[in-house]
Image 1 (spheres, rainbow, N blue to C red):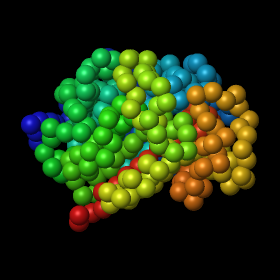
Image 2 (cartoon, helix red, strand yellow):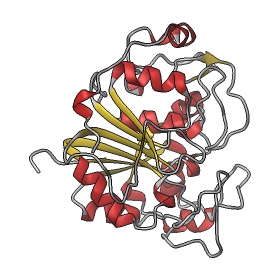
Image 3 (cartoon, helix red, strand yellow):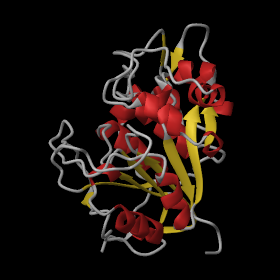
Length: 291
């Protein structure tokens, strides 16, 4: 079993410090204290790069930061992690299948007792291999788990959530991202594989919120301002080009509007490259203290 007690924040290599010089010695705080990019400018909340535009297109898998390589969902993951509370230096953090490279992991190791994991290492590299259905870590050993676009590849969702809950300490935080393509969770109608040939077992919907609450999490379903506005107005149409993979009409019709909390308003979302809003739904789940 892996022990996190032996993990300590490590020294940042010189190349990482030089490339990410704008970090200085500060972990990016929540958005409310981040510098606002100038008119028409954009800002990466992971490496603090600022420029005229992100590379690529507005999509959860694009809008690439030219400095650190983050994409839209990476930046929303970090925004959600710091939502309403700042990550503390030295926290014990596990990130499953991180897509950012060695410089990012070195920097995370400088600030936190950081572990990266993957299940089969077919497309990602981790310090350890972990099956979320049977996590080889001690009970209450972690302060935070970041798991972006992994749970849909796990056959037994409830077993994975139970294990994640077990290894987080009271007051710990899970930041959970999955592709939400429809209103209700169901298996794919035909065999489905993502680009790294990993099978997809579930297409998640909003009922994931209730499943998390049943395990006694304090659950916050986060979105950006345009998504909350669309739900409030009852629209069934989206102004941008619709990715045909998303059942957007069904998502808008079936969404419980009172379950979503806005993590970034429309202007903040534009400045961070968090578009389109319907591709960015993210769950922040806190373990109640004393339980």
